[in-house]
Image (cartoon, rainbow, N blue to C red; front, side):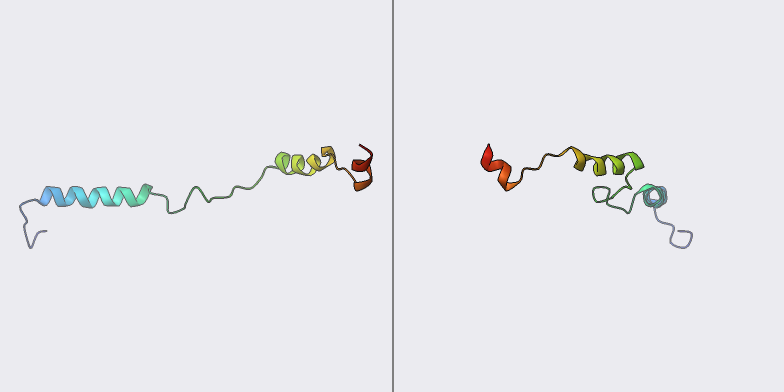
Length: 64
């Protein structure tokens, strides 16, 4: 900038500043695909959910 002395030096500095700020605050991770660890309560609930599901055997369904 000092060597070339462009007419729009302020615009160039603003662009550089904006790009620097944008790269600092932009996430490089796709938040839609992020997987979060389950809490202990959720993991326990999924295990216990199997206790409350009703399964019908082939013999029981023929009786009904």
